[in-house]
Amino acid sequence: MPFKELDPEVTRKLLEGHEDVLTPAVLKQDAFYRACRCPRCGKACQKEFVKGHVFADENNIAPRSCLRCTSCKCLFDPHSGLILESTG
Image 1 (cartoon, rainbow, N blue to C red):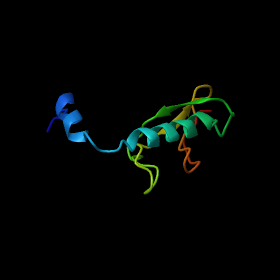
Image 2 (image 1 turned 135 degrees about the vertical axis):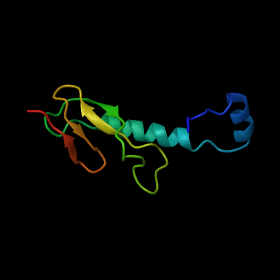
Image 3 (image 1 turned 180 degrees about the vertical axis):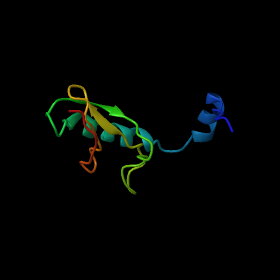
Image 4 (image 1 turned 60 degrees about the horizontal axis):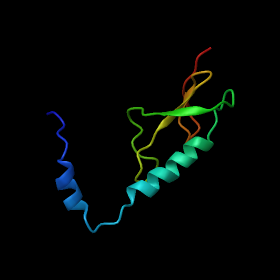
């Protein structure tokens, strides 16, 4: 079954009056990712969504990401420290 997005105006009306808890959670998670460095070479990384990594933990509603090093291309889970892919 294909995914069908909800009309933005309908979404706004449904969310009216409710507190936005997702945006602060995502901003906090993004700050954590920006502070992370590659466990192999110490260089900067960028977010990459990997199937099976949906949420960071039961207390965090922000989608979980893995990080890929922009230098050595190592892919790791910054929440557990587990290296998922490593080249060379």
